Length: 190
Image (cartoon, rainbow, N blue to C red; front, side):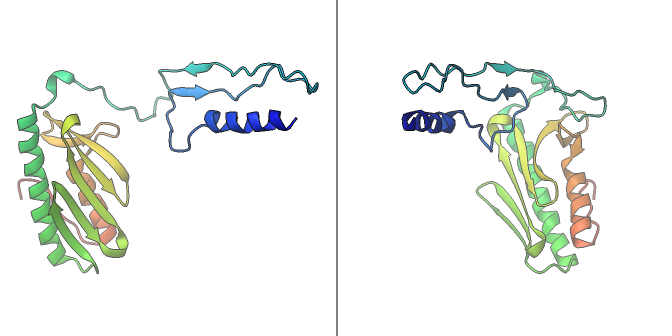
């Protein structure tokens, strides 16, 4: 009997779904133990339920936010990506430094190093913006909206989050005004 429980505990370690994996594309049915009898001499065999794979949302709705498809023909070449990403990050750095002179936020600090732009707002949180060259994206970690990955949209001439179609500059403008109480204009024309 003890061997049966030890075996079950060991098996549970391997079958237990990870808490950090939140993919809706792979659904695991609960483990079904088949063949166990109360007879101590016959343990039978362990059989797990099959995995079901799904390539579409379980409950599709018309208002769900689905990422737009990637147009691989319009992906940036690496040198163009670096030029656009560096320009964006350096423009944001300058505007954040100017914004820091306007707002009265304890702990306000702008730092750029190792191709990572960090905007610290003291107790209000920290923004981290960095380039992801293999994906040709700019990644943002926001204390308000969380993590986002931005792709260059040629038609909009802006970094856009495909899932929500949000513009990087507009997200910063909205969130910084919300947090600091002062508007900021990050459009390139100013």
